[in-house]
Image (tube, rainbow, N blue to C red; front, top):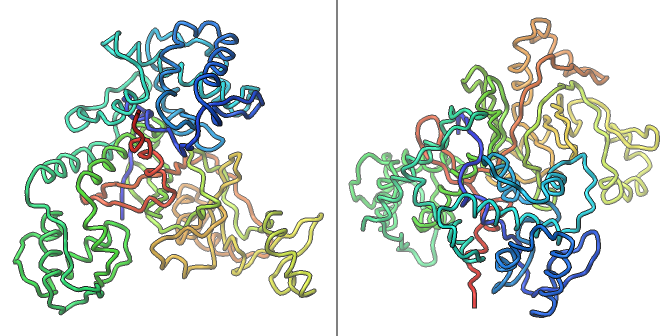
Length: 520
């Protein structure tokens, strides 16, 4: 899918309200340790202990005590603004929005700012941090809401999250430091209108396979299932007309291929149970996904709107897009971190291209994977073109190097980077979560050449020789290239075609999980 992404900053209250992730089925208690969380045993006494202790230390918030504590009542409680041990993207969204609100006085602003400053050594417990962010929500909501008497509660926050009624019709407002030059938000907005119209119509009906048990359908097959698929693809716009035919003909083959490509499926003509299941996802779920990703558009740094050159990697679609002078120069399939070693979602700047890289094997891989192999085979390192240097194992440059022929560096605390790979067959899989967190790029060689076009000394011949070298060769870019690692489960391509992608890290699911929690 070739997609030109241009986005802007966060707008709208409903975006961040859904971060009540990984909710644990326990009630309040409080342990005063640096990493304490608002989770554990029994009812109101412990709840009072938390509030009394917190508001004694943060006395300026006492006037908001009732509202703040109401957010934690009548629900199974985990932290509201954390995703495991890190502040969630919605906590960050709240902070950014609050900062941009004119005349908003933020109590304990210094302490809150420390939570978002990676260079700061904050001693706040998770309990204090979460409650400070809840207080920020209350202060912001009271400032932003015309109804000053609105009752604050967990359910009210959920309603805020669900209140996307204006998304179809409104346009984001540009702030002084943000340009509304992006088009992805508006493209999703147009698709949302279409899907909401379709949702209100009576045309959308579940596909009920005629085969039991279901068997894959291929070209020339005859089945009532085929007729239902044909109608579905007509409604989705992959077919220009609905002939009602139950024969899997050439016309339907083309539509199936179009449907599969835009949704990230393997491009073939087989209609499996997986494809029928995806076609049967309720329209209300699709609408919710579109709204959610419209809000993600708001989260993207305004830097992308101001950048004339950037690399964007979208994890759910397993794709890299390189944009220069406002135009897509190239796209490439990628594979990303496995669920246990997820690729981090963040923005950075590519400052170096490294040709014929060494691969220093992480100690975790040495301990968990290599130590036993080395013990069993004294020649293992030599056979794998590896060597021991200063107590560390590294793989020498070469075509079989795990980093391939080139890597792209952008400083970040998680040591994530992009690189080539000799494992090209892995790009044939639909779900490509194979790495330890780094981004493996199928067309890494082409990406390096594209990024070096403004450097006359880097001819194609020089690039080829650098990639075939026996020693590492690092080139520092004089102009750093922004990189955006994103998580969009729906996107519109340059042809106006919507794609829905697998929620590989279950971030959509985590965001929507609070909606199943109701008060007693």
